Length: 278
Image 1 (cartoon, rainbow, N blue to C red):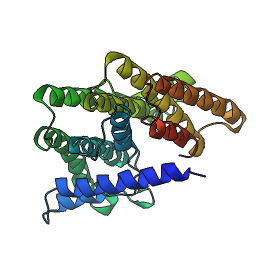
Image 2 (cartoon, helix red, strand yellow; image 1 turned 120 degrees about the vertical axis):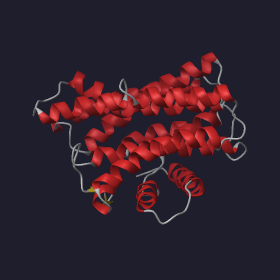
Image 3 (cartoon, rainbow, N blue to C red; image 1 turned 180 degrees about the horizontal axis):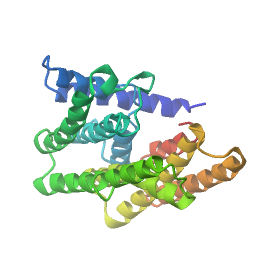
Image 4 (cartoon, one colour; image 1 turned 45 degrees about the vertical axis):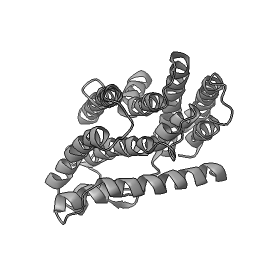
């Protein structure tokens, strides 16, 4: 069962992210805008914005004191939702439902879904450039660089391409190949969230190293837990995989302890336990 403190944290962040997202999208009656809002204001837990916000908090930078943290967190959620819209398309995973609701292309149509995803990439970068008040030009450029590398041809897009090739050729993945794809498709964006939180919280080199190591271990644990949930792990291997998850969680917490910020790391520690309940 989900920890009550973690549940309350997720609900708090989700509420504030949803409110800020609504403020960032211009209201009009265009079908494309409706497709964007439908996908953005979904049933997601806002885990990636949460990682940004709590990374900044671990560095004594509170999102309710610095509105740029929430704004950038919303921008990263736009990137995550773009990836889900495109993943669901018939030319990709061809899914009709996500989180119990019709996928974007089923609710609207394929071309508006494709363009909604494209628009969210542009809106992410526009948001970072025009809607933040306290970030300087260099910090904005660095955040955009981090996101671009995470989602581009050496990151998320590559992972999706490799995954589709395996599916197309009906070829089984080795454990190493599956891990590589998971890191590219999921882990890189988690790492980017923590890197962005480090920029927002003005982390020093040691703090940044510890937090990035945390993100790498968190991403691996999250994906393994997700594979168990989706029945992608052979039942005979589950106990071994759970052992790996526990080890990864320990590595997460060991890296957090290097920050010497007992109060600030509490929520990131809670998030590591999320890996057993996804």
